[in-house]
Length: 289
Image 1: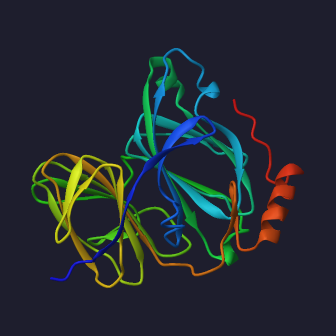
Image 2 (image 1 turned 180 degrees about the vertical axis):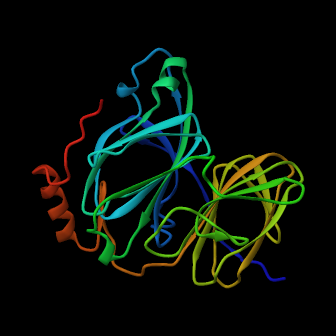
């Protein structure tokens, strides 16, 4: 069998985002984006005990024109937004928001986590959408670990949580504007699995924890992102130790991208309009309670 070739191996260097240390495998000078994926941040944040959660995490900020997606790996995240959504999603769950014409949201640790202390580990992925969907009404789709469809092999050494798209006949619950696969994969020692991705998709694999082996390529350690080419459909992953991997694929949108701060549109003029609309209150108000 011919396997997908590795186009690039991108290490998630640590950067400072307004005082919050996050790891960012892309964008970099090597790779501006992986159409339709714009950015990946991986953060593991220590939450002090006996604190008010409203003062922790990421406070209210705006978005327009794309879908910020948060995969929760440890702890629990409290999402609030200017459309009235408020929900807590714990480890194994996903928060899939589409900013649409504009929304203000915050991502705090749950009050329980802030009471007891611990860690909040998340991956935030920015997913672009076509121009025709950029100014639709915002939506928020919370998905708990318990509600996420799952596939496992006979030995239960490979578990695949299907957040979006389809895997081995199981369909994820998240609605997307363009074809997207979002698979959260857990391996125990000895686990091995073949994955198939359409050649029409951009595809990457990010090692959240542990170490894996890609057949035909070699060892990939944690905090590294593998960017595949699209010449073949298959790649095979094995693990000699416990490991967690995020696999994402999607149809490229192939439209111009204008991005500044929390706004992603098609032209610089649309970015200026987004800034103005935020400043005059068109994206709503978020009062955290």
